[in-house]
Image (cartoon, rainbow, N blue to C red; front, side, top):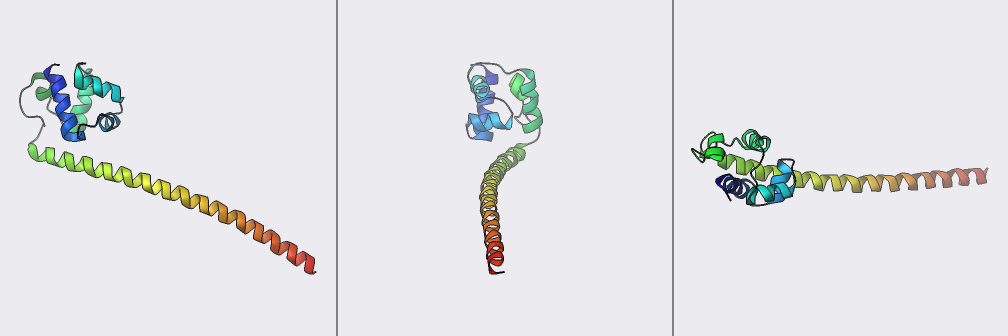
Length: 130
């Protein structure tokens, strides 16, 4: 394992709490790719550019093992961790809301069907009484 793989391990631990799935999802790649990058495969430059763009990782840090991890100071690292946690919470909430919406749509469909049945019964009752 070389220092680039070590750096990717460090990023995975800091930003994604060591979770390859979350790391892969965030970077729109496979979990297998992340696992390989963490072990022994050096990522292609496009992945490293994504690290730079999305996490504001210092190129010198990941490529040359020099300088700070982040383009800015350590305050940004804390903010990134908080942002990631907030994004995770929001994604979970979105999933919950989608499920609730799906359940409500089911209820609406059932009520609409019952409404049609009742209308039909009222119409029949009215027809029979005339």
